[in-house]
Image 1 (spheres, helix red, strand yellow):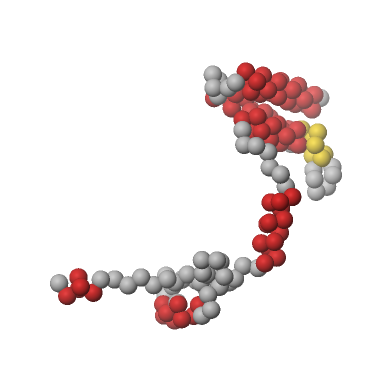
Image 2 (tube, one colour):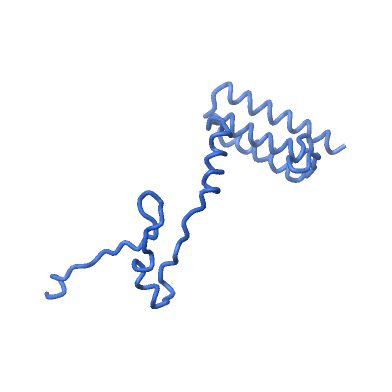
Length: 144
């Protein structure tokens, strides 16, 4: 019964405050660190501002397409075009062919069409059908 009256103690061992800033004296918060146990919390370093700034920059300069079925199919078809060597590698500015990956991507789009049959709008169905036909034609031409 004596133990029930004691209750329990909650210790906040986080190294950062609610604003993401390093707390002033993290050593005193980690009293279990002195024991060097395996389960002792690891000290965290304050995040570097440069990395955070780059992330913010990337978010504000790169507009992302709307998340929908058409943008998914478009993204997959862009990958297929890359593997077919019709889109240059952004690092080397040279086309790069990998026909096995191109075929895999085309098959993935075809599988997506089969799995979504009856759930697409007429416009989405026409779009994916056209994309598959175009990619298959380009694949056959790349085999020559």
